[in-house]
Length: 443
Image (cartoon, rainbow, N blue to C red; front, side, top):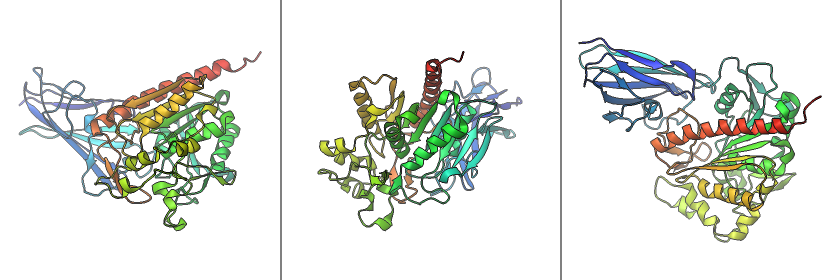
């Protein structure tokens, strides 16, 4: 039997770098099964496997070859990663390490009939060489700042999580690895903060933006907002309320309207707490979609078949045009380019529709900056970045505990992860260059 080798190239790199996984030295037509194991989250092992047939040269190359069977189908260089699933039922959905910005190490094996198991490893880093991390507790803020290598100044990004709360260190670390000073800010479910989104004062974010401008001193004053889900709603809202502090907006599956507290509500506020306000501005609750809404009903969510789709309830609320207009985010006030990353099979809320609402409003007012909606057909709510598992479509909400589906399929969602991140990096690069060109030149 010929000797064979299993290689992963590059073995160790940033998480968004695709790898070439290949087996060489096989007999022509020989079958080999590749498998992976990664320790993710709180001690949970995620696994995948796929069986391949070698070509006439005795090579299996995942950049070229589709598996005969296994955890995924079709040609996908990183299919063994995005198709991973927990090895135990009911395991937590968290795909990053227990230390959020830590590297992930995946063991890769290749098993041939009657031959020793081949082994390799794949290391995915969120924090590139020279990136520094420090906790921020200034001015009442609760967050983590990641600073790129080099003396700077660097453009900056404020990173906001969604209705799960917490501090999105993985995304901030990756932004910093690409040259952006990134502040991952917590606004609930973070140390010293409320466990719920209800009655969150937007002045938290105003303080954070002023802090970034003052302490980080970003390149040409460039500060972008990047938010996911409720964070996507937030970045549009903040850019409309504080346009002078925001240079660009990246909305991952964003909302076009202000929403109520929904599943992240404080139950102590009473039986209708999910219909209560999420955001306060200057001490007053902002009008939201569920407020005085004549058509809104939670029945499609409360009584719908499992796995429930939260979007079905929100579609009932969007049938009241007066309530929609009251709650609409005034995106026409934004002073910068806008990138909207949306999905047509979003189970959490209708992000495709929301993206169109924002883009159409900006077109109506002839917004003088670039506006792009990248809508992923068949994709779901969980657009993250490459290359992470996309198999956990049904989950328990981290605040309410209720089961729902984010929508999409693992393969389509993996494509959305990869394509969206490439678009984000291109968008930011162009936005930074444009702002730099507009800055007065020193003499």
